[in-house]
Amino acid sequence: MGTENNEKPLDKMTVKELREIAKEISEITGVHAKNKAELLSAIKKSRGIREKPKKSDRSVQALKKAIKALRNKQAEAVNADDKKMAAIYRRKISRLKKKTRRAA
Image 1 (tube, rainbow, N blue to C red):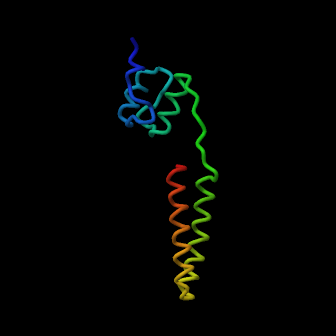
Image 2: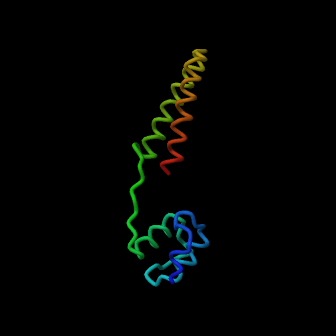
Image 3: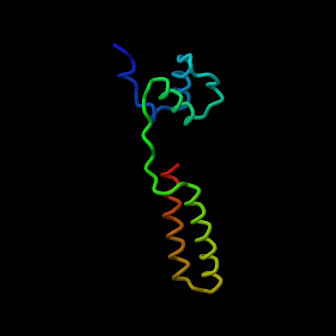
């Protein structure tokens, strides 16, 4: 009976737990210098687990550019004393920020 079946999913593990697993795998070097994402990909690669690509309709950089443009429009609306449009831009910015958090 292997312990692989009893352990929680790799994505749910903490960095400390991932380091312990990575130490046991001889293929992985520099365990303590890696962050969680690097450890996950290295462990999955050594175990032969394929990583599913993230479902993101836009990249994080594109989302941040859109947020910056909306902030400029929001500032113009505030300066023009257009409260309605400023509120609309604020909500759009908020939605895009949520998407960046999900995509990251």
